[in-house]
Image 1: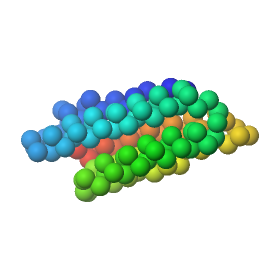
Image 2: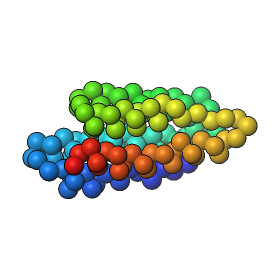
Image 3: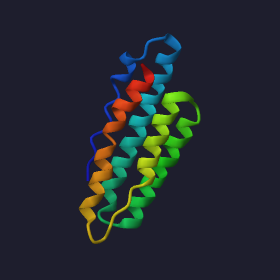
Image 4: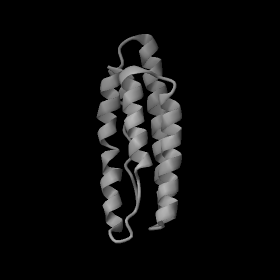
Length: 117
């Protein structure tokens, strides 16, 4: 299973003030790294529900830690992203249903960009 890496490159230009731009660059880099690690782990889990959930839990923990460094809309957007990672599960009766959660990740790009502008 492959997730398109969250394309957060736009964050670097979406942020206005210099201090905020540094924060947005850091957020973009960290979220991209976490998403890439999650994508890589997905290639190894197949349809193992426990491994899939563990990968989501690990990604959620990392994003929550990142959210703790910020406040306001940016922290809220990151916490929402963490909740999405935390909610990943495979229903053994419908293993492809997990893709719905994975597809939600792309929506967070816009939310995080908005928080940085």
